[in-house]
Image (cartoon, rainbow, N blue to C red; front, side, top):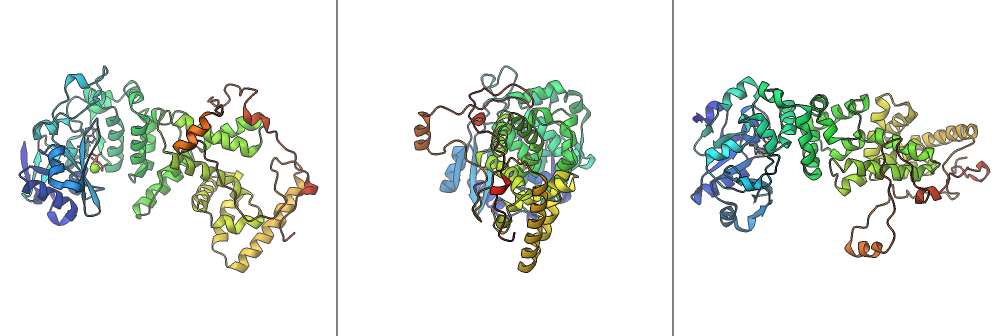
Length: 485
Ligand code: ATP
Ligand code: MG
C-alpha cells in the first residue's frame, strides 16, 4: 500500500462539494474512519467532473444511522448501504466489506448477499477496477493506493482487481462496467480482461435481474459517450444480452440519436433514457406493426398491440419502468399524428406534452434518411418558428396539399371523425390498472391474450380480440376536410 499526497494527485478540498465533506467530517468526529472512494476520486484525478461522490467507512450501516439520525436511511438487502441526506444531496455511505461467506454465492459463483463487514484492505480487494479503489481522506490530504492504481490512471488502463474470470463470475455486471468505463474514460482494457471477455462469458448476464440490467443500460445511455460504447456492446456480444430482438447493427438513425444524446449531455441538457430505447426499438416496432397489418388489423390497433409486444419482449432483458414504457409508446404514436395531422389539430398538437419528444424523434428519422417521414420533420421544425399569420398560411397550404394527395389515394385505413375537433385523443391507452382496487375488479374479467412471437413468427389465434376489428374502407364522400376547404 502506498500513501499518496492528495495535492500531488491534483486533489484538493476546494474541488469537493460541502455535502461530501460534511459526511466525512461527521463520521470522523464520531470516531470512525471515512474516505471518499470510487468514481469521484477517479474522475477528479483525471480532471473530469465527477457525477457524484461515494463515501466508505468502518461504521456499520446501523452506526451510520446513529450518527446521522433521521438524515439516514438504510437501503438494500443484497448490498446493504446507508443513504445520507446532506443538504439537498444524497450520499451513499458504504461499510468496508470482507469477502462474502460461501453460503451466499450461487452455484456459478455469483454473489447473492454481500453484507459481511471487514477491513479497508478487504474492502479494497472487493472493488472492481484499480482506478475505482483509491481511498481519499480529504482532511488528511492523503490517498491510499493499495495496487498502484495511480499507474493505471497515468497509462489509461482499465485493470480488474484479482482474477478477471472470477471477478466476472462473481458479478457479471462488471462486464458492462468494463465497457462503460473504457468508453467514458477512453481507457484501454487490460489484456487479461480481453482474454476472458468472451461471448460465453457474456451469457452469465442472463442471470442478472432485468431491473438491474435496466439501471445499467441507463448508465450506458447517459454517461456522455453512448456513441463510443455502442459498437463495443456489439463487439463484445453484450448487445444480444441487453436487447434480444434488436439487430446488432448501428443504423444511421441509432448513431444520430446516440451522437445527439452525447451532445445534449455535454451542454448540460437533460436527457430521457427512454428516448433512446424508443429509437432502439423503433425497427422491431415497425416490423411488428407490419405483422399485425398483414393480418388485416386496423392500423391504430396494430400500432398499439405492436408497441405492447415489443416492450414486453424487451422486458425479458431490461425492465423499463411503466412510466418510461408509456413515454416510448407515446413517442411512437406521435409519429403517426405528426406525419398526417388533422389541420384543425396542428396547433393543439404543437403544444402537446409529448410534442417535443415526438418531433425530435421524427426529425432524427428524417435526417437519418428515412423518407417515410415525407418531409414532415422539416415542416414541423419550420412551423414552430412561424408567427401566428404564417402558421395559418402554412396550415392552409398543408391542408390543400393533403386534400390533393387524398383525392389521388382512394383507399386508406384511417377513419376520421366527421366533427371538427381540436382535442387530441390520448396517445396511448394504459394497459394494466395501477390501483389495487382496479386490479381486483379486473381480475374477474378474462385476460386479454397477447401472443408473444418474433417478427414473422407464429399465428395469432382466431379468437384474438384485435381480429374482431376489421380494416374499414373510408368513404371519401363522408369525410369532412378542415375548415379552410
Ligand atoms: P460512476 O458513479 O461515475 O458511474 P463509480 O465508479 O463511482 O462510477 P458506482 O456504481 O457509483 O461507480 O460505484 C462506486 C464504487 O463502488 C466503484 O467505484 C467501485 O469501487 C465499487 N463498485 C461498484 N459496483 C461494483 C461492482 N459491481 N463490483 C465491484 N465494485 C463495485
Ligand atoms: Mg459513483
